Length: 113
Image 1 (tube, one colour):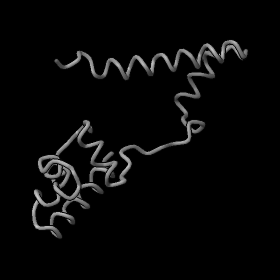
Image 2 (spheres, rainbow, N blue to C red):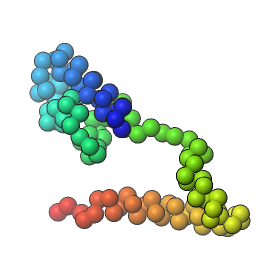
Image 3 (tube, one colour):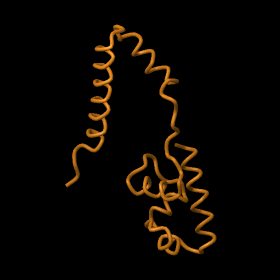
Image 4 (cartoon, one colour):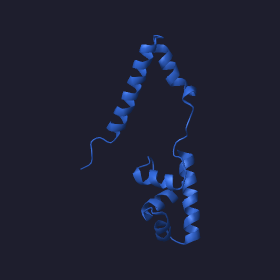
């Protein structure tokens, strides 16, 4: 994430210098001036909706995509618990997907009102 933060910061600072203000860049990009300011100053920890949308507009991926077959900790855990059968493999895959869904939905909990 640090690489993406630096890259976004550099791009926004360059664009602000070229256009002359955050307001002009905001109008051009459709990103709020306050979000652009945060990006330029690398002043964010976890990307919220506005940061994610800005990163997408600037075509800067926020996460490195790795080949899942190279993820040693996950593969080790699976090899320790899998009984070798197709039915158990399907059950483990389903359990992992359920855990992922639970994590996604609980990350935004409690819902904002």
